[in-house]
Image (cartoon, helix red, strand yellow):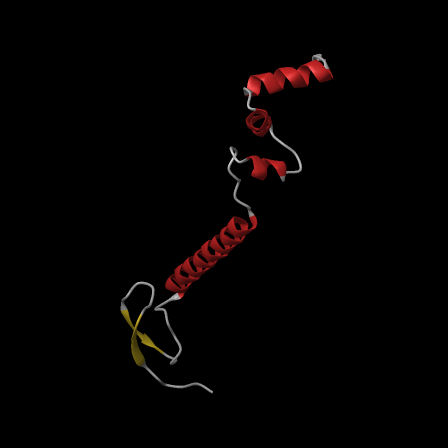
Length: 108
């Protein structure tokens, strides 16, 4: 079945007026349809990356205050800076203590 419908429409991509043969036609031609598809895919990718970013932000626990003793006490391990704050000394002292215990690192 074919129809002889001719409807004046405006292309959603380029904004030009065209004559559509069906009631659901949105674009004036193949080029505008392809451009609109690329825009749609690009927007979907941006939305999905924004969702992933939001999920990552929620999953990352904010770093606690380094100067808080109780925040450091509850950690499983300490960085050199955190250990220096906990022991109230300079971070270089911690580095020196580590190298004294483990010995100097030999280069291969």
